[in-house]
Length: 319
Image (cartoon, rainbow, N blue to C red):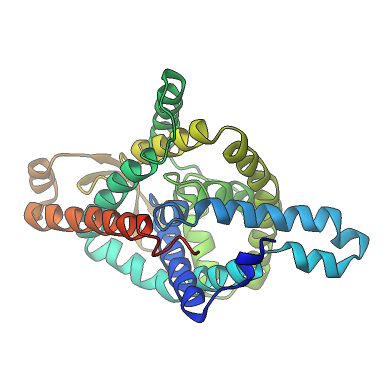
């Protein structure tokens, strides 16, 4: 582990905890990725490297009972406050975020729409050299993410092996900017199931899901770490493309085509279609609140740009 990484002030640790809060809150929302928050707060590459260092340390030292070297390799001053923030956010904010999505969907989606637009711009600006191959990589990212957003959710089993598989797949999406792990869970038919398990503290389900997540992180972080080191510009272009493609999911005005009944007997949207604000008014009878939506979209956009500005002035560089 880099010596500079072990020397973090209390302020640094608090900021990392708050970034974890942001990542956790984003991961709760189907359509927003915690990886996006990590990228715009300038910790994404360190996050991937740190996760991969854990995988490497387990493989090289832990299984050989070389515990001293094992703990030396892991970037604990980075991972502990970040993971604590993510966990705290998921446990405490999941109800609030889900309530806002139900009661004020246009406002919340507008905010995230602006946030993701700005994030895509910020991420694309981090490409060091532009070429036709980099451009094509970005286009591929757009098409992949857009394709994921138009898939229809499935009805799937609640068996132990599928909970493991869901964790494995979802965590890969959660650490990718632009591809939402929550939305992947929705596609797998396990979004409400996992959230209810967290709310009701069903530890058997939570443990299986966590084990699946650990397996996904072990495999996928190594791949991402290698891509960012060897093919930085291509990897970042694809990540920027993922963000742009995911905008289809966070468009604020939607009409519901098909509903499903959750475990509490409530009807929830299953398949939705994007519509224009006036069409939304006609279909739902609700005000599209266009002015508020634009204001909140601009707020989300501005927050990201300000974070990027602070990062460029080394406010977050030390992290």
